[in-house]
Image (tube, rainbow, N blue to C red; front, side, top):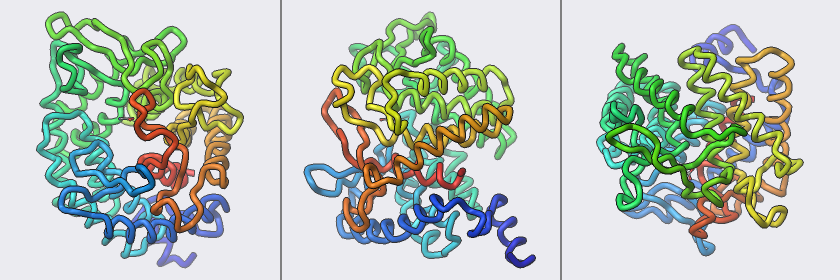
Length: 390
Ligand code: GLY
């Protein structure tokens, strides 16, 4: 690499590896992704209407697009930004900007906790990679909107507003993924409010979401007067007492972020404990792509969840940078196994099929029989992120 290109690389990415130094599996997956996502863009644009504009899954043999309000709307823009990060080809930045802009209205939407997913994947990656000043404003507004859902008596951000007859103040483990936006907002503005809310949320989640075996409940419902938990249940898992595979992924990834942003060893410990639960589980298959729930009654015939595997891999590559060499090697080995599995024909789509999704065999919400054993856009997002981290 010339001095000039090395300098450009450092300037742009801060972590550029020359093509020859990259693992073959990273190069071949991105070569595949360039073609498959070009095909995806054609498919998505052909199916787009005023209302729906970002790909989510395949339903009844058709490409299923979602509106900006859906929790998944940031993943496609994020994927396009990751393509730009890897290739530095302006084509991907242009597409990423287009799809990111389609989610702009969401910065003001107060009725959901999913702000991190919706805005940090698109606007967050875009701001990190391209630095557009208006992206910064959108992200700050998004963080402001998100903290309107924080109740100091409970000490947590409220997740959902539905099922009010059943829940007073539901908090789901997925909510750990929205904290990164708040940590970013404190660094961007100097206002520590966001940071403290994120830390309070993460600490109280450790207190109440985890069982003795370090698996997590999906939903914990709190009493709004006492701030104590009143119900511990599931919504997308097999049973209240079961370990929903993606829920464990959100916890692993979420506490890894919390450690990165705070340096608090309690968060590192929590991530390590979750990792142990996941990978020591007797129902974890050899290829490390979990069944949709560790306690699914029909294992080994239960559907897998490739999205959970992709999130585990991405989190493990980061977690491996915070621990001693032996433990780091163990985490990287597991993440490498996942990447190898997901890159195989068993999980990766053939080129120019499946409307341009990269991965097959994810499960969204098995209890309601929706999105079972299908491509899901967030599986592709965390797969590319894991490859970049590798
Ligand atoms: N945040 C929703 C899910 O993981 O399905």
